[in-house]
Image 1: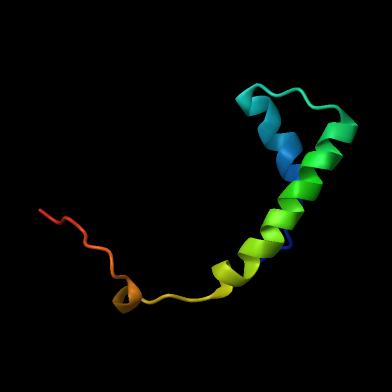
Image 2: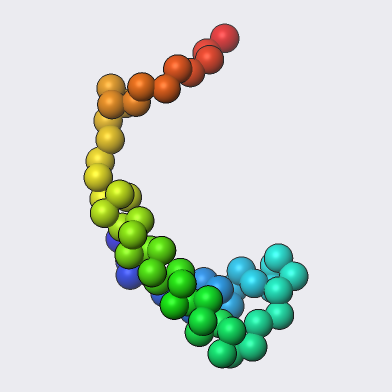
Length: 60
């Protein structure tokens, strides 16, 4: 998996959702994204198999 580049992601996505962020705002938002990514990384790395899924699924 490639390293997460929050600032590049924010600069790419912000205009598509109507946000006009100044460079300091991009930096501040990137800091929060990096913090969240740090929390999520171990969860994303934990591999689940289909047999591990306990949610009922509707299949017609």
